[in-house]
Amino acid sequence: MLPELHTERLLLREVRLEDGPALQAFQNRPEQWRHQAVEPEELADGTLRVQRYFEHCGPDTERRIFVYVALLRSSGEMVGQVSLSRSHPAIAHLGFGVAGEHFRKGYATEMSRRLIAFGFEDILVHRICADVAIGNAGCVRVLEKLGMTREGVSRDCILAQGKWWTEAKYAILEQDHRMMAWAA
Image (cartoon, rainbow, N blue to C red; front, side, top):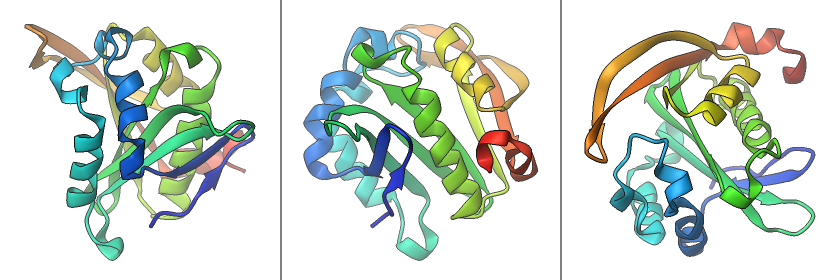
């Protein structure tokens, strides 16, 4: 079981099987996948996705996947989810999503910032990466607020929703994180 993480407004806790319907309720909306290189069917069954997470996360000592839901501390309402997936013991990939009714309130930045700190300070990764569809301006803004560096672009790298997607590649290193004012 993963530790609970706290921010000023949010409680981050490991996803649970009973979170599946709530995740599905916000992730299976067009505003969620319209700017992502995914097939909508991939987000259609939240409970199945949580089951797969537990099947593939790995044992505690070698955990590869860390998925948290973000809940408002004031009400317990789920506002989104955030995750780290390790592709190597020292490299992780950041993913996040916020329910449409909570867009543009800073939750994506807040929960991602906390999970980045967890990645560098608790699971001791050296590098955290993120890929974002070029047209996803909101996610690009979040990654830049987090201090991630745009390292390049992969053109037509994913075929989804009947079209080719171009993605920007972002990353932050542990040394960059230490120098951030918000990391202190």
